[in-house]
Length: 55
Image (cartoon, rainbow, N blue to C red; front, side):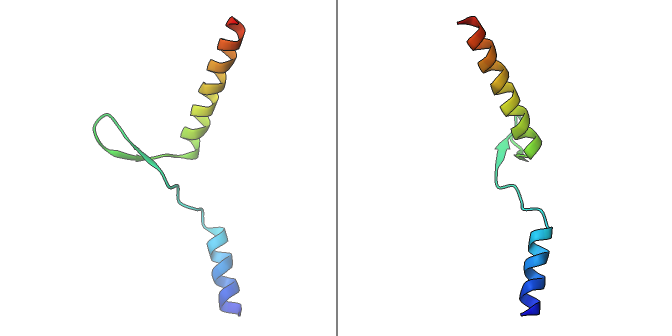
């Protein structure tokens, strides 16, 4: 049992891989990072606020 709990602890300590990528303008595969997702959400929110202010 101890080996199982050590394996579980090691799995929880390691960051999970990001399962997604995009293809850039040069055709290269680029991993999607949490920072990229955060930036996209911030830009979306700004555009929604700007649109709401126009109406």
